[in-house]
Image (cartoon, rainbow over all chains, first blue to last red; front, side, top):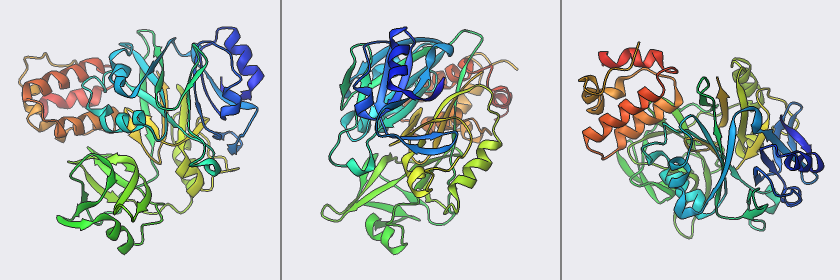
Length: 327
Length: 71
């Protein structure tokens, strides 16, 4: 099971002891009983019929019992190293973190620095809220063991796989570097005052405006040994003179801005149709792709899942579709 | 192709920078390469980390493991 279901159906599964990963509006998750589940708030989903917004009565449920043995954990912002430290030797750590808190920022900055991060894969997403509630509602994650919600902790479903199986994390990133200016950043940060462009120090906000990129639709694309890792622009804070980002930039990485994508839905359909669907058990896509790509009501194929405020594949990603494959 | 033992000289070369020449489309491997490039850890620590990674994912990375002694 990896689909939208009613709250009543989810509650029944929980009462039967089925381990679940859940995504949905807070009003729906609040109704669920104690059990072997984790959850996070989000009202946006990509389902077979297309992008959908669910504001009450349903949750997106992934039955983890068919994947492996499940153990639940919950970590505060100072305890995030525990995500990898307590991960199974063979499996993955399905992790949900609420947007905007210390846990989000610390995971983003530190996750890839853990020496075991690539031995014990962490995958998951960042919980959010309805865009009309930005600034008023706080994203939450849920520890089903006590049916409690948290605004600044990480919940984890550790999924252990049989020895004959293994998990791999895959991404679909529509964005390609534009091949123009090369940007470098001196610090790991969500907030950038200046950077180097082709070796020359510049004010980042002024640079964005000079290139007409302040709309934020095009992410920075970092070159991680050939992997394209996006960092999306949130806003320019003129009072502080900084550009706010949805994920940190890192020193020692070459960044370009992305080329525009003309038709997100068509591009996703083409990329996902070319992928082998075998073994893909869950996935998530980014709210910025949903919004900028106008994906509501548009089917793109591939695995169903929540549309999130950040995606996790070993580390925090932006504007990227993430999938877990078990093979 | 099996993963060379930890005492094989390839691991030192990889830790000293040869890992950057590995050809791969595997996300975890690409992110590991970048982590090793950016890491201030001593070469001996990197050597152990790289070896542990390929030993762990031996079954999933035959093309990458085939390259290790040639870089």
